[in-house]
Each structure stands twice: as structure tokens, then as C-alpha cells.
Length: 86
Image (cartoon, rainbow, N blue to C red; front, side, top):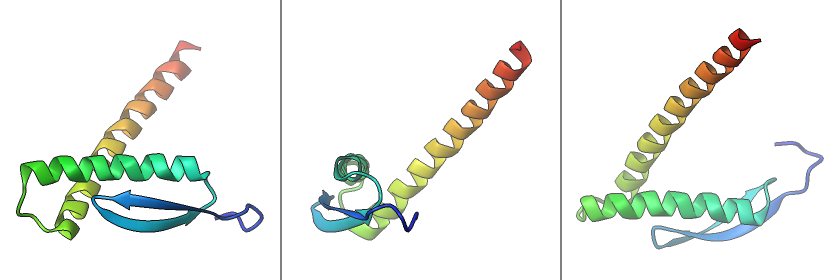
């Protein structure tokens, strides 16, 4: 975190649990991120209705990390292609 930037807070609900997030991003951004996490967890809850919340959260984190890794690989390929095209 950048100590010169103000800290914002956002009240969010993720998978039925209310939380307060603090960060340097806007409240709207934090809300949208929380909404995405909640959506992922709710989808998993529909698939695994007996799974406890903390395991849903870990599984959602694994799926999101996998998606991020794949997007980073694709981004790297796009950058390499753009460098070669120069």
C-alpha cells in the first residue's frame, strides 16, 4: 500500500457474510471485486451444497488463481507477439 494514498472502506457481503474491506482502491471497485468473489462462491455452493464456507472460499481462490495464471500467460504471449511485430 502507498502510505500517501487515502484508505477507503467498503461494507460488502460475500456469500452471505458481511465484511468491511479497507484499501486504496475506490469503494465501488472493492464492491465489484467482492461481488465477483461472492458470485464464484455461490456457484460453488450450488455445486457442493454441503461444503462449509471456508472450503468454498479456498476452492474459489484456487479457481481464481488458475484463471489469473492463464490470463498472465496469455498476456505474456500477446506482448511477445507485439514485440515480434515491430
